[in-house]
Image (cartoon, rainbow, N blue to C red; front, side, top):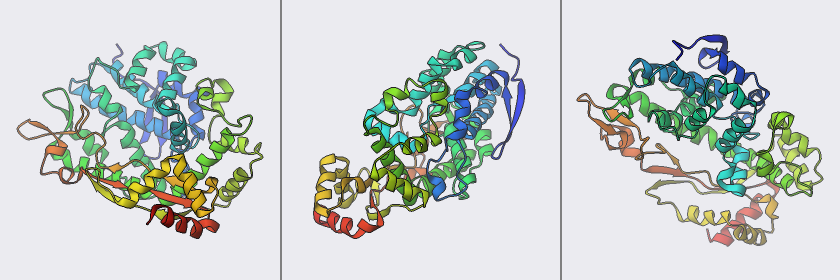
Length: 426
């Protein structure tokens, strides 16, 4: 057991300041596998709308490790984490959690998950990379790689605290990306009081992570900040328009004979130079080999920063799954036969009908499961935040923001709008 964390290097980060790096962390960071994350933008195509949003998965991974270290040290000092080795394992898991991200991050992941299901999740690709590359050897010099993987995949059973730190409404990933994305986009919604949250984090009598009542406002601010960041940045209509183009380009390249880009089975076999090169630049190299007129036109729109236009939008604030009739009808566009039907009705090729329905936007992703956020009252009673009637979250958490949009290029806007009205009876 090591007596403390010894940092062999310091890296300056624009969000957290100086981040100390241990020798085992440095050995991981210095691999080409990890350095690849320098070339994967954190926010995909958001830089077309927010020019400062060119930060990468590399900096976010370091930031997540830093936040994990701060929280883990807090819990170790309170006796809920046994030793510095446990702190180090948690930091390694946070450092490696985004290793398997696709070029343009979630933009391409959304496409690949539609095609290949759960196998295409970046978390599974991260685990595969660790298991079959030099990273396993780097970690195994000091720790069991299987333990790091178990922490990453929330299957670690030796300490129940580890899972909510990796995946919950108050996990280290969310804390860092809110701060980092707000900083780089310039919007104010994502700024949260990290120090207050960490200072008031505690463990209840059932050994569950919770927050003291005096830290509740800082926690509520974080949850509302995340909600507004999704509306303002992540689900921004023009950001979505550019990401739809990127998805369509990759899909068309996959459909060429032979395919010009990797399918999911090929991605799981990547190693060495091929893995390193699977970054944002990879897509542009593949585009240069394409003969598709659709691909060429889409790329010309990207290079000229010409977004798709919204032909129809159906926003809804939903309570207990309720939504507007228009929203429910537009969900039918997830079925190919309805895209085909709309194409015939509007006279527009299917390639130029783009449909986007992001997941429901909610204040709490996990309101009532084992990772649900809890509040410790002054009498030491611990209750879920969603059952605490003095919290604004108690009154709002059941409301979900929904939105579905149909896009096309400017020339087809009127035709598609008229076609939607006829096809769906709007």
